[in-house]
Image (cartoon, rainbow, N blue to C red; front, side, top):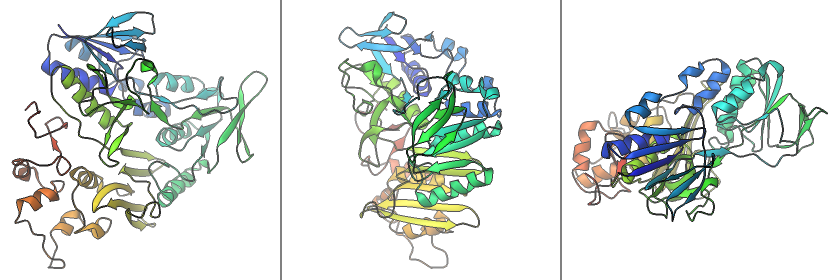
Length: 474
């Protein structure tokens, strides 16, 4: 009987459990859970803080899920280390667990910048239920909060605090809101939303010190510019980094994250990694990198779990996809969305801006392939743009129309002879065009013939990419 050990208990772990049980009904599965909860939706914790969602709604898997899949969960225990030669995991409670196959799904950890006075009470991160409860428990004593970082966690936390009638000031090192997603023009739409909501923000500056009184309570922060902001609490939301601490000194290869191949296996046979801790292939950059988003973590887990149980699934790559709304502002982005027009000569940036309607559309193109997009206000094209990135379709024929007030089918099938019709007589041309805008009935035609993986990405019924080659499980 195989011994499966999964370190972590979030989305990658859950999908791995499902994939293992599809292939192995009897193997023993043990999950190491650093928190005392079943798998829960981390993005929802800001909604709980705001009072919009009740805490009982956070879990998306109940105890019954683990019972039905015959999974033993060790709650409130962390993975401290791994001995790959002895196939043994060392836990934070001093115990050891043997394994045949190990999945590292230990997630990410908040980055805490080296700020003077940051250690101590009234300073919070915001990625777990424990973080949420710690801050919520102090709200009666808090009047003003400084949020360090204008990324997604920072903006949603700021919105939640504002809904609880707290004064909020956002401080961001970069010169724009959501700096990993928006360029300066896109940020201007977010800034207007903050202005309408009465939220203060400081861009292009950073917190260098946290001032405390004699009792140790936070009273102010000091900025690099010399400015001081009075406050009662600080939320640090400057980003999350892959958690590689449990594998230090183990021989498992690490860069920014735990490096995996296309089967989600590390350099150590039988040891896999998935989710925020993993460094996997990015189809846009053409290299491995951490991709800390839930859809990729889910796919990682499915593929890793299948392969741990003897499958031959392969991860053909991914790219960041994000969607967020705060203070009436809404944006969806993917890939290289924040790149500027003058950042690289080989990149083409097309934009559409309608200030009066609050609509902003931007696409980033290189070698006639869509590499990224950002849509603000009107987000109806987000799915089409994402499909164009996945299919690696040549968009040269209609790229000028991508951001205009015209639907993609109208661009492809011109009306009234305004543009020459596209030639679909050659199957090779059809396949190269991709299936992003075609109905499902066409896909059998496309997938009936072999294709290079960079031209077409086939998905199984669970949304997992797989190769069309001889190594496939079928």
